Length: 434
Image (cartoon, rainbow, N blue to C red; front, side, top):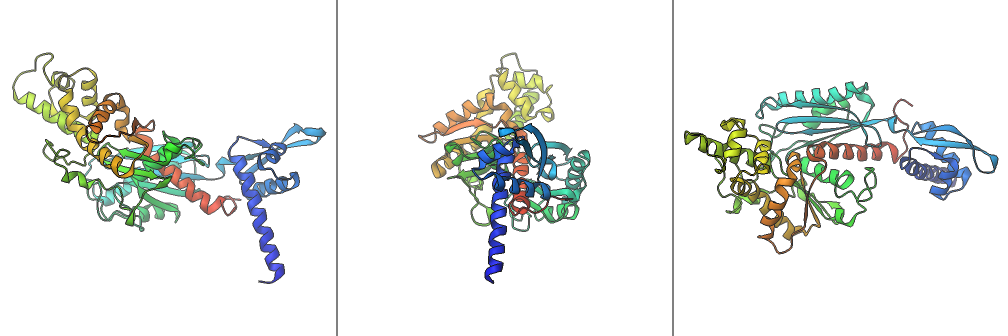
């Protein structure tokens, strides 16, 4: 490279770095005057104005007049264009599909959801349902698919580089399904597929209990507790996402965190209902144990007496085992059903062994119970803590996620934002349509 070419390249790099610095400041506030930008960036006014004007030309910022500033000079106000592009997050589960469309601050502007009619739905039909749900959110926002800067989908199991799960998944018939390919056909190449537990952990780190200073979704993780956090996704199946020293734990082939070892623990696998597995989630085991108890009482051919174990649950389910779901079991426990100790032992034993084992291996400061069952934290957390305390001498803080069943899709939005930032904002490419 000739000296002149090198000087041009260096100058372009400096301009990009200055613009990136101004962009970071703008993203932290609704709007900033030129004087405020000078103060926030510690750069000279001409440099700040040149960088801000570059962002305006690229379509990532807007400029407006703000009256008279210091020394009588007209004040210029700049704002980040959060609507300059959008990202899409998806949560692909066994029973539901959720889609959230967000602007570049991570604020959700449209949402869609679909219920899977049968958890054993063939892969091709499930993929069609995922595409339909994704397009539902895009159409609700009035956007064309090509305007999305990135798409992220979360699914159960270790995700391979091709965006498919080939070894183990909690979704029947979904091994090898081309989730990334199906979405790329609709939305282009900027599609990433990630393990749902990793996304739930990322959501906690960015916008949940482990967020610390990062509640805006861009610079989370300032809280030391968030540096060492285990997120236990505990609805239909038990799964784990973990940050260790501030780094997401992946392992070879993205297969770290597999809880298959629970099958080797007799206490974790004890007294499981027919068809249940020790790595089933708290919600699934609550449903299975509750249905078994109601069936036992129904077989006794008589409504149980008030106060008898299972009487409250039997009444809430109308004596029908098929009407028992996790929420019904949690409601019975809240109402003081005397079968509560038996039910809690059954639904929490695998989770307690998982938390205890991970506590010994990873020494997290915080364990977050995530997924829909987090809404039952008032019922579950204290019994879970007691069970973990029986297994290990040092129990980490155990808390329920405020994100609940939005955890995976929130993490998908966060990861989609990271990909969009890496592709467009870091290199300061023009905003779509500009």
